[in-house]
Amino acid sequence: MKKQVLLFTIALITMTYSNAQEKLNINTSKSELKWYGDYTFYFGGHYGNVTFKEGYFIKSQDVIVGGEFVLDMNSITSTDIEKADANESLVNHLKDPDFFDVKKFPLAKLSITKVKYQDSTHMHIEADLTIKGITKPINFQAEVDYSKKQMTTKFKIDRTRWDISYNSNIKDGAISDAIGFEVKLSL
Image (cartoon, rainbow, N blue to C red; front, side, top):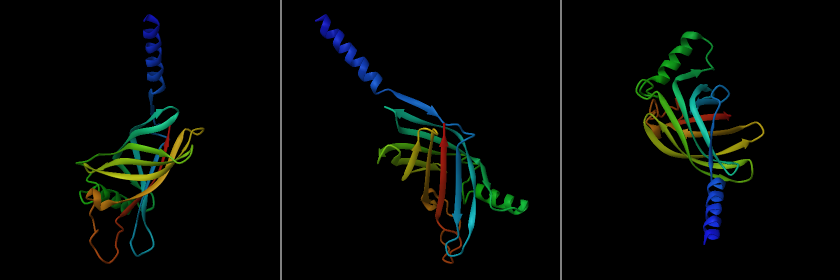
């Protein structure tokens, strides 16, 4: 009987350690989020950056299985406009209620809910994205480079799903409803 209890205890400890999860904090100074918005029918658009406030991956059995990343929406910049007053005007407009309403919603968040690996470095990610207090599911492809300790991805969202409605109903093609993101998350 003692032998069976000992074997059961060893098996339980082994299962606990083999299913253990590790939290890996990202390096916010090395991680990047680039955004871009295009005009619908005209060439051009605007682009810039938003910085990460914090974030982490969940790793289990040597692979990424989840994570959560928080963006500081007050950090939004435009990198395509060189003239200082025009740049400031665009950034202030992006912080207004008809875009990101930064005074009321200073943070945005992405929470990974499911990861499906296509091979050892490519994955399909399902996540919940929260902008302006509205959470919607999204999915995208990503690539992880374990030797560089980073994950990269590019994806677009329909901004109207998060009540980012500025000029979304104008028929002359002023601004696309799509916002693109290019993300590099580094440990």
